[in-house]
Length: 318
Ligand SMILES: [Zn+2]
Ligand SMILES: [Zn+2]
Picture 1 (spheres, rainbow, N blue to C red):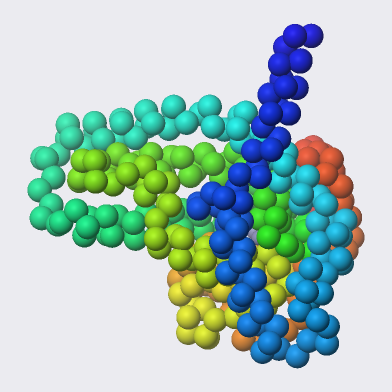
Picture 2 (cartoon, rainbow, N blue to C red; picture 1 turned 30 degrees about the vertical axis):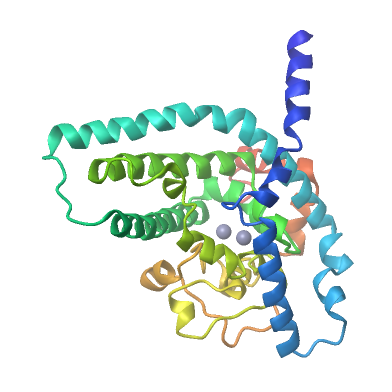
């Protein structure tokens, strides 16, 4: 009984933790990024013919108070607590992997003799970290879509029928764990490599992708990816960087859009691997898995158990 009480108190104390995301510079829903997204949304509003006032265009009840949105909010809180209880304790293992990578390089290779200044190293490394993370994200996301077993879990994210910035946290815990695992492995290896090349200059924040290049992306309307605001980029830019509208296409229930625009920041990977769709010529989109299937995920509890149920009833389900 004491254990139960302790667990309950732990959960209760951590329940408010996700609210700290609003001030975390590494989180997309940091207040600053939300404000910049709002300004960009105003630009889209002004340049497109809307027949309702701006506040209604942005804060429409149909979007923020939809059944789908409430599932997003619950998963946001649930996953926030889960991250603290389950995932962050694993951070020590992550540090060991970083140290092991560094030891391996130092034992097997000559000491690095890079002739770059500290600033040059920091800039080069910040860019490398953003690019490498993004590529790994693309691969993990592609696998989530293509492997039927994993798709059942990733479907939770795609079952949202309305999009708002909190929808980015609408993930099944299994996906949350896989995402964090791949993130930790990549960041540990990068940290080991970074330390090999230049002891001490690159700090943990850079490894954790909190750097000017990642922040620029977040600042440039990243919150509009999960929204109805159709912010497009120039046609040629959308081959290199994913616009918010392109991610909305990723959420479309039109089969022509399935498994497309899988990148997080760069569209480059989609372009290279043939999964790119640019926003040009795309107009109205409907989000979700189609009305019949989205119904299977229209409550918080359903999103948690449905993937297991579907996997256990294979092949009847396919
Ligand atoms: Zn996806
Ligand atoms: Zn999404």
